Image (cartoon, rainbow, N blue to C red):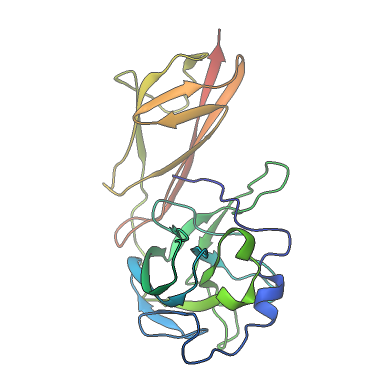
Length: 261
């Protein structure tokens, strides 16, 4: 499910990207698939789970791992990241130092990217295809960022960046479709059903492809197979996305509900 992560301060990565210090033999480090900082993760599938291998993590330090669109200025903070289920990974801080730890992250070649630290409540959103060429053979469109959590979010000690490169997919992948039901009834195309304020109704989202969907909402809450309006009037918009697959293209669609008393 899409969600905002309050992990990035205004200076997130700005200092960290600019100056990642050299590491002593027994200092903190993080790697993916044996690749060290700025090592290329190549020949990735459309969607795969990668493991961030962490060594010598100090007590009281947590980590995030995010797959993001690399900003035009690579020294600035990424603002378009994959926040779908499993793609925004978190390793909580512990009271004791850890000699080793692991952090799994789902890495998708295509995703609907959101700002992990939106300002003024605006998370933005854009479709990202990490296979698109940057025009520079030395750079990639996307990268996995590992960074400290909370007060360590802008600490360059914990930043690691892993550029990504993916295997090609078929050019003729099929379009996907979302099948929605409200209170046991299928919703037709263009329907704008009513929701009563503070009344939960059974709500399901399935994709024709069988792939998993990520769901976020504005004006209502979608949780545990139900939808509930959180306003007294107006509308609720549900955003439904998928990261696509070998045979299906990614999906971005919305469903609007009317809120009544």
